Amino acid sequence: MLIDSHAHLNFSAFDKDRKKIIKECLDSDLWMINVGTKYETGKKAKEIAESYKRGVYATVGLHPIHVKNGLKIKMDPQEGGFIPKGEDFDRGKYEKLAESKKVVAIGEIGLDYYYFPKGSSKEEIESLKNRQKEVLFEQIRLANDLDLPIIFHCRKAHDDLIELLEASNLRRIKSVVHSFTGKWRQAENYLKMGFYLGFNGLIFRLNLDKIIERIPLDKILIETDAPFLTPPEFPEKRNNPFGVKFVAEKIAGIKKINYEEVANITFKNAKRLFGI
Image (spheres, rainbow, N blue to C red):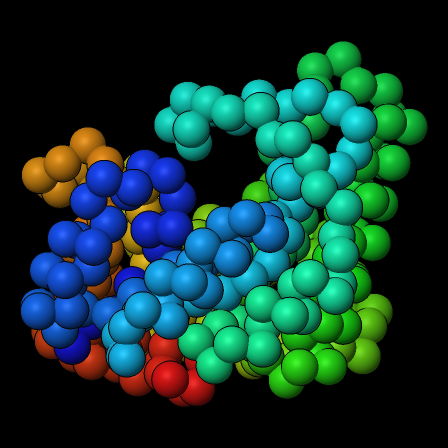
């Protein structure tokens, strides 16, 4: 058994063949969690998950790049190349989505300091950071109130996220930092908080071997972030949950253990974290 703990088959990139891919995954004992990034994609993930008895789950949350801030920020081409419209966090709407038994976490939520507009002043950047933190706090409280785990997105902001969590009384909530690419000291801080760390196709682009080697396997989740971050040997340009197999094989090689051990333990880790 395998599970892609962070996919986006709820995105429009899969509108034409979503059902076909999900059927092929389930027929191959490959489960998935489709992650929401704003209200629209969270709602879609929930609807998809509710169409299947088991093996397909959803999360809901407002990604930091979608937090309304009054500025136009264009995404990199490999991340869709779109300009986020911006959304105010409406707790009631997200809480309603999370009532579904197929919604297993709040996420992906967090901090993203990568897409600050060029030429922004220090004051503007600080204002954007504070806005992201405010929305993040609201969503952490929602997860805490609903007793749901969290999927954190964090890019170029690990120290701020760690500081924010350590300063709160909510840091012990069950969580995973998805697509982890930070330093060992940051990984160590997350592990001390009881968090899991998620790895995907970025481990083929960045040298994270020494960090992965030191992280206990029972604290690792594997993911694709599909349709993005396609492993180099994957047969298609667009990634999908089948790409998680390559991530598992890479981790097995780094840790010098069997592929089956990585697949089985990361599957159990995801079941434990998300209660599925």
